[in-house]
Length: 498
Image 1 (cartoon, rainbow, N blue to C red):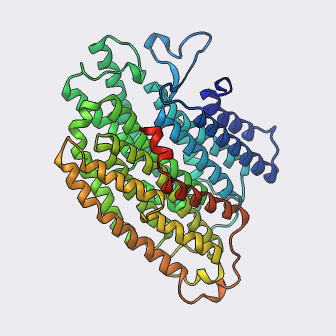
Image 2: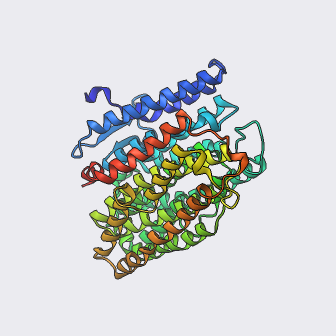
Image 3: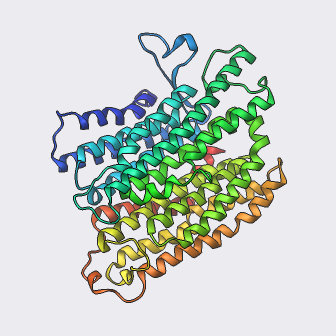
């Protein structure tokens, strides 16, 4: 079976499809483009599931690409090498699944420029998969920067014929520029950290290589390690995001179309968490032990501060955006615990939060398509005219606040247990105790949205709105199925990470 499994195929197939879609040879018929893109996403997801089914934790997938029989930059020890371990395998399958959901959600949310839109979607998919599978620091950075191009166009593009207060092309363009500037700023500081790590690893250990497996921090001076770790954390903290580097995210979500918001919250933010895991947690463990207590404080600020901001919002998308920042604090707190429970909790919450945010942004998009507003102060009585939609919305909102039997409940509890059992600092235990109010705060702003939007008297303009379409039903049902399955059978993920 392994002969049919290929990491380069997994990564570069979306890139080839992107080039095919943008080429003048491919048809402009939007129905053909849409169906072809959905078929490719479905095939890629099934292929990643096949790789997961054949995955052996003791023997991770490895692959190296040579150029005319040589390494990429052989004189500097930089190789085009990829590796899929347990964490990468889970994130790869999750990426394929989220992009499949986004392709389904695109039917009603994308009205023009279909070829360019789906081309950028697949380019972004290839870049993210490259980040999750790179085994060389500079190849990692190459894909990290590559994702800026499609993300800029997907956030700032005008994908609908009409322009409204929420689909203002100027605001979308400004949000895209803000995202690029923040990310590029962080990337330059991160690149400094990578270069220093590469240099000091060579001078200390005599190894001219950028591969993660060849980096050892034992011979690098402690102060240099801390400086490198901070440089790396700055770049990853922008993408995660960590307060105060978070201000690009709410604007990007507000102005991006629903499928793009699903990808941003479901996958793109997780690249920051993965970078912290791969570089700081795994490659520079000594420095991470030193700065973990400080990071735990930042994680606590993320959890509590943005939860209060989320409660003050009236736009559904901004509520979910700030909720995402709050949940990223939980992922960071799990990593800071520096034990197996905390690490498993972080990866589990990445999956759980990806499913929840896909569902919540899909709900926001459906509300806007039907009611032409996302302001919860003007919404009312949707439940009586959209009963199926209301049922899905209730269950997904309950999952987001950590109700038992859903996946977020497992990850939240494991995160707190992992932090409480940390042997490195009492600050982790204090942060775990203070993070408990997250469950109450998230309940407040999510139930506020549910109560104001779905209950009350139904305005006349909402009386004839349609309930869920087939595509919307498939997206919400898939999200809910994942939340229930992993909530009832968490070992499906935890056994891979053990």
